[in-house]
Length: 354
Ligand code: PMP
Image (cartoon, rainbow, N blue to C red; front, side, top):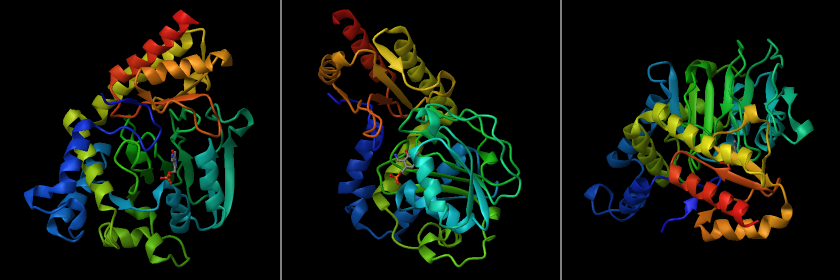
């Protein structure tokens, strides 16, 4: 039986997607060729990447609004510097909510002055700062919508006249937002979309072309727009699986549908964390992530027992990030509600036998 997969990323993908993807590796489109041995410029693959790009915009409600969707390489980490390379002239403002925001700040500092408008580092990134001021004279404001490692999630975004850039790597396509508030969104594929290798960038075209520096071709959004994500060979398998996952999501009822399921899953787990005296939630309740729930054992002596129980229950990927320890249950779009129930059952079993 397939394991209940709570891995933080790469992570669970829909079974039907894995099935179709594995068939395409052997025989794509009944052409008697593998998806990964045909030219990326063949009509068969061009259709795939065009569909993936248009589905991304459709699901986010950003069609015909001046946005382009691109599939790039280098992971979300490449976007830490690419956003700054393409958009930072003099000064940018960043909200620091964890490891990934800190890494984005480090890279952007190479390109201009950075203002850290607020940081939750003082409390081990266990909350989302509020009531900070975003200065007016900046090239853009950057934030991380969901903090994969700590398990916090931004529930609202600041009103600012500056372009809004967001790293949505770990919660894209999981909840409804007014995505048209954002001027650039990026996300590594390996959470809610597909295998590692591709990064989705959704950019409003009119924020580009405003920096004076020369931008190397491989880092230039404008060039990828002109070449329709085909400046060089794209990561074909990752793009194909992303297309399948986006189709799966659309067929289910899109973000509106999956958000309801995601809320059910996270409510089930957080209710148990709050009810069960053996467990403690790690982050501020109002900032809890619907994707990554972090928790600890009230009594570390139960660690061995708990770890044995969840492993016996066919659960995978529950250890917290190596930098913070504890436990982290990642409940991405493809994780079924019954997997969360299996985890809750184990937590209750521990309470019974402890
Ligand atoms: N941002 C966030 C929010 C992430 O969770 C991650 C990876 N877990 C990254 C950026 C870095 O992504 P990548 O490994 O694709 O560079």
